[in-house]
Image 1 (cartoon, rainbow, N blue to C red):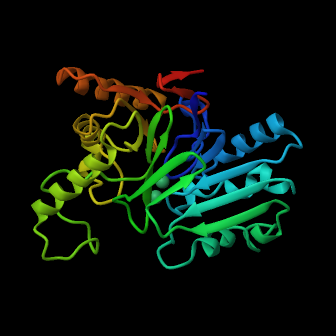
Image 2 (image 1 turned 90 degrees about the vertical axis):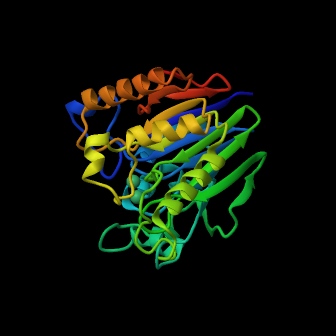
Length: 306
Ligand SMILES: [Zn+2]
Ligand SMILES: [Zn+2]
């Protein structure tokens, strides 16, 4: 049985419908993974609405047992949950896993966006069996799929996941600022007596080890190098740094993700071409794609279809 990855939302920060984003899509972060007989959903941005419609059409009255892994509770990663159709069907189970939000518990944050006056139906009132679990461990399993989590460099508590399937591994870091070597530590992130350079090196090294040999890496590449100069410390990735990181970690396929809401299709294509040129200049084999809404990727081949 193959592992199939499908992109339902690839945009960062806010949905961007319109003519200029038709090619890559305007929905926010949501990726579906079918592996080992499980359906695992990464993030619940607005793309999860479309996934919900697909699941209801495909499985009809058959009970669904779904797992949703949240990277963090920023709006663009949870906003689609109230519109996820399977939670309105009593036969379904949804297990939501994530780490605690900055000050509030995970359940409080998720229920908060479904409270009056901002939404008419409470999360605890939906007919499906929804179970919310705050993770404490960084290693756990979803059926036969082993999962490792690692903290991302992003404001508040935010993680990335690496999922090990029998057909290969998938790493998901939708929001992350790659720490270039020599970069100063982000405010409040570490003890202030850590020398800046050592911090950059150790963070970079930790991430390289976490990602080493990943078959499919889906990572925040919100800014190009020029834009990044004005956005250091914002918690989002610089394309050139992410390509360098993927090369160092010997990743097989990199998917550019969390496209900037101000980037139209032409700009995303241009960034993809730039990333491929960086790899070619280093005479390396890393395969690079830009994540596109509706596209599926099959492991072990890791090619983007549709
Ligand atoms: Zn985001
Ligand atoms: Zn975020």
